[in-house]
Length: 100
Image 1 (cartoon, rainbow, N blue to C red):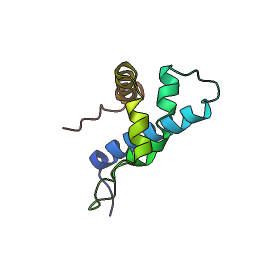
Image 2: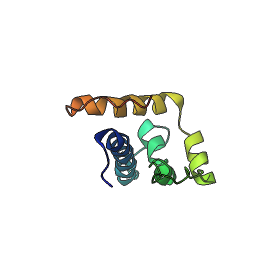
Image 3: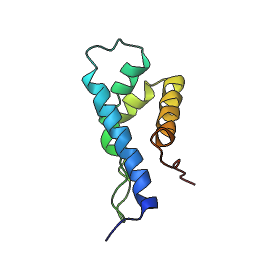
Image 4: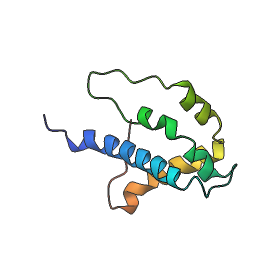
C-alpha cells in the first residue's frame, strides 16, 4: 500500500534524526565531554526507538542504555537539537512538519 505524503514526512523527519545521530557518532572521537555534540552522540542507543513502528505495531519501550543516555543530555542541548531539526524542512524548501 502506498503511503501518503503526510504519512511520509514524519517518517522522513525521524530518519533524518537517526542519520544525524549516527553521523555524530562518527565524530565521537573528536568531541569533548560535556559539549552538546558529545551529548547527542551518546544518544546512539536511542536510534532504534526514534523511528515510528510499522502501522499496527506498538511503540518499542526504550532500554536502560537509551534512558541513561537521554538523561545525560542537557535541556539546552536537547532543545537546540530539536530547534535545528524543526528548521530543516524550511531550509530544504519543504513544508514544516506538524504533528498535531
